[in-house]
Image 1 (cartoon, rainbow, N blue to C red):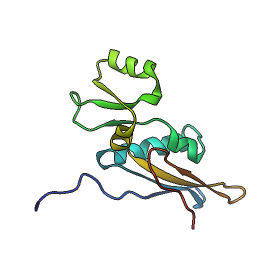
Image 2: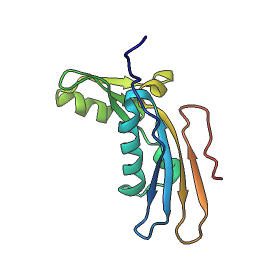
Image 3: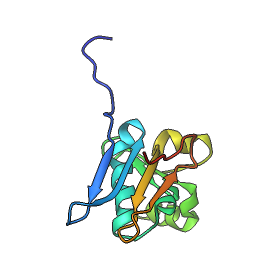
Image 4: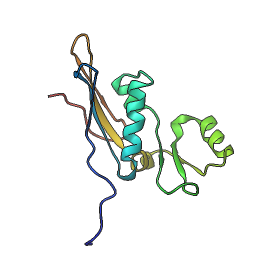
Length: 135
């Protein structure tokens, strides 16, 4: 219908090191979750020091509705302790599992460049089909 905008934009991203060399290129698809998924993946790579595959495999969360009343979708792979702790803090938690995971937390790929050897490492989301292919 006319006058409507999509819930997302295409968000391929690149991260460079201070010297300008490539750190990683990556992207997470998934409508409302795109900026949330992008942020979680980059935090996994940089702050948590995960490799490309581990960073994309890591469980994610997503908020689709405006807080404070919208649910927080939390992948069940976080474990019941995390889901319970969030619920005890008053957050409306919805566990995401199976096919629902792809719909609410998105899917993505990463290509990481080793700074010493120049080797490119790919990570591809197990939540869907696809692959990371450095060119």
